[in-house]
Image 1: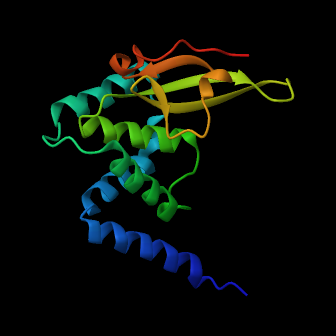
Image 2: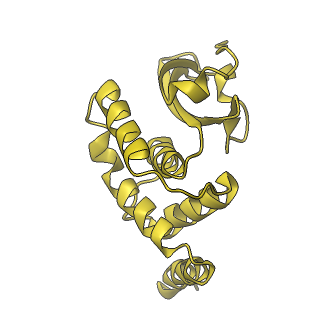
Image 3: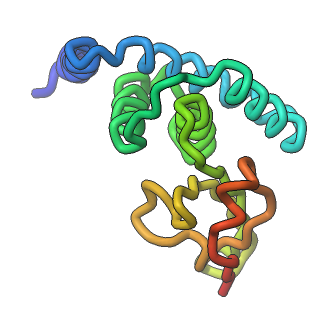
Length: 165
């Protein structure tokens, strides 16, 4: 029988590992952004884009870090933060976009719409683009979703055109 303690122990283990690596600040920063993500998504996308870009350029981090290391810490935070932190592409994408841009990494966040598999309605998704390719996605979402809006136009300009089947 699984006890209530097991999930808590796993979360504490993640937090201890992050602290040992010296990524506590990044973990806490991303936790705060992830908590705020549902509220932030009520801001019109052009205004939110400008707000996030302002924070990325106004207080840039002088040291450019490895995007994979940053993403690993944020993804660990998302695992440890549930159920306080919502799951889903919006929370994940917005949080990763924010911390990667603050680290000086030229990444874009694309929002797209596509047909549901059974053809009855539409579905939305958002994903990161790094070096012109979807980043941290199991498969290329641009085959299923037409891009409707993009944060970080400079990085997105190098991306391949969207295809929606």
